[in-house]
Image (cartoon, rainbow, N blue to C red; front, side, top):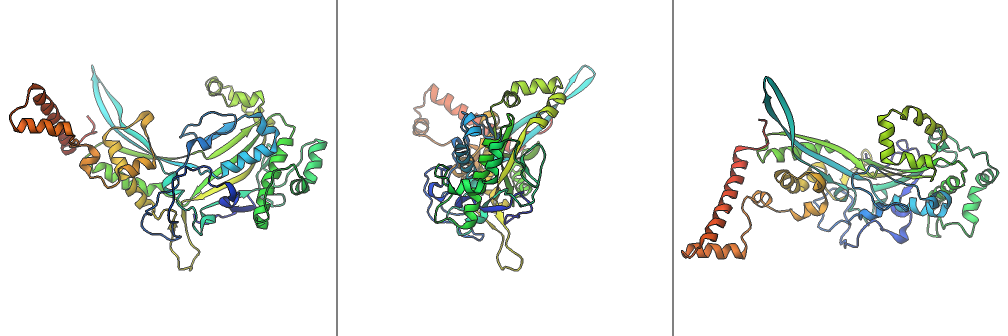
Length: 443
């Protein structure tokens, strides 16, 4: 929790992600304006709109789509395995994107049925949806004086004595160049090639600090090592980490609000991290087969993975040298006089209260399936609404409805007006009965 601990990540060089390339930031967001920057200490919820994440920014070269709940993004684009400049740009752009914390909410009840002498119990799902928490806890610090603490990076470097995948099949503390004359000579003079070549990607400018220039150079060095590695089966992976967040606090708050709707079923929560890693595979047929979902399931069902997994493990050269850590909260040093702070001034309890209107409406409307992902826009849209408005216990009165009521009051209502009034009244009574008597109980 709090500041990045170098013992937690297998990296030796670290710096603010926003400092990685300040000229073209922030590409993963929309142009939604941000007014005042959030102070560094905890305060009431900010009045400005945090920058929005764009889903298309997570799409890698060589791919066309990515689902919001995907744990990792994968590509086999050949250019990323051959051109170190393109690989550097792709990894750098992905470093600017946070992982997507998803809090799942599911409500179920049990229905019993009798088949002759046998009693059967069936679990019925009343609602099931997920909250995309990224925009409400991992953004909003843009321009903050402590921005370099909200998000940090770690890149493995030579001589750091950290165990990591440095182009081998096992973790190691040192880099061993492949048995290739061109790669070996490049490895020996990699830093000179990075800093002195006119054709290499610009890894820094005159404004960069020595530490920042070192981070960029280290990342570029590993990209070149990966592309020059002659191994046919290889992979380059960026890992994203989350620190300083306890979803169990949100669990308790949201569960009580759902139960306030007189829900009598069982409410379960789960937490997952979408987009927690990015992997670039070489376009070898083995990598193509292992990333094909149909082939993957065939191998699992037929138990062929017992043979194929050791083969892949022996063949694959893994480069897992880049990590980003996103801090949901910062815990100050001991005796510093400061308090624990959050990017948007909301701790886990306040964040749960912010999501409460959207959660109550989604549970009441039995939201599930493809429409089961709630975003910050859903939460913002429902802020300040009463329970009746959230649950649509009383439908909003339209101009047509007011005209119908006027005709009824004047005694000029026709058959259609009476039918509409009857249907409307039955719907309101049914909703009131459901809220009063309870719903979702075992039966």
